[in-house]
Image (tube, each protein chain N blue to C red):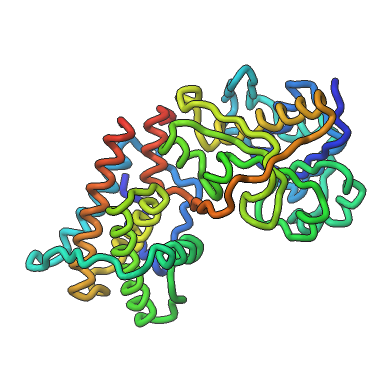
Length: 231
Length: 155
C-alpha cells in the first residue's frame, strides 16, 4: 500500500468520486485524507456488473460506494458545498486538494488552496460542458486534463493531460463509464508522476480567448453514441 | 417513442437537457417527425424568408451565453412576454443559421437545435407571418446541416 500524503480528495457522493476511489484502491494508493460532503445514498444497481478497461487500468462496478469509503477511511462532512468548508480545509492549506464535486467554487478557496480539478476535455480548446461529446464529434478522441482551479471556467494551469482515440471506447457508455474512467486514469497517473518526481509541474494554458461549450443537444449526443456504438 | 421536447411548451417549462435518454434506435426519426409536424402547420402560401442575420458574431455569442443558461430571453408573466420571447428567438435562430452557413460549428448547431426545440414546442398561433417564414428557412437549414453531420460521422 502506497500512501501519498501530499494529497487529499474532497468530493460528493457521485460516479466520478466512485471511479477515483475505486481505481486508487486497485492501484493500492491511499491519500492523506478523503472528505465526502453532501452525503447521500449512491445507488449503483443499474450499473451492477459493469466494468471498463482503459490503457491497462480497470474499474469494476461491483463494490459499494460505502465499502470504498471504508477502505480509504473517508470522513463524511456535514456540508452541502465545498464553499462551506473553508475552516475544515484549513489544516490542508499546504496539500493538494483533488476536487470531485460540482458547482462554482468561491474565490477564497481557489485562491487560498491548491485545488485540482480533472476536466474531461483538452484545454483550453474544450472548456465547459459535455466536451467529451464535442471532442468525439470533431476529433474522434477524448482528453482529460488536470488543472489548478481558478475563478474562470476551466482556466488554470494544466498539470497533466491524457488523450485517447475514440476507437478505444467503443461500446462503453460515455456518460457512465468513459467520462469518469478517463478522469480516474489521469488522477492515478498524476499521483504516480508526483511520487516519481516529488513535485507537480504545471503549464499555463496557451490562450484565454477560447470559447465555452454548453450542454450538447440530445440529437448530437445520440449521434455520438451511435458513432461509438454505445447504443 | 415521441421526441421528448415536443410534448410541452418549453417557454413555460424551459428544458435543461440534463442526462437525456437518447438510447432509442429511432431517436433521430422521432426528432425529424417532430420538426415535420411543426412545418406542416405553417400555411402553404408562406414561403421561406432567408433575410440573414443582423447581429455581429460577438453579439450572437453573447446571446448564446444568455440562452444556454436561461433558455428564455424575458421572464414570462403573461402572453405578451411569450410573444416577446418568440420574436427574439426567431431572430436569434436566423442569426445562428447565418453564422452556421458561413462557418459550421457544433456548439452553434447544438444551440440552434435547442432554439428550434423551444419554438416548435409552441402553438403556431403565437407566431406572426414573417416569423413563420423565417422558421421555414431556419428549420430547413437545420435539416440540411443534420444530414451533413450524419454523413460526416458515418452513422
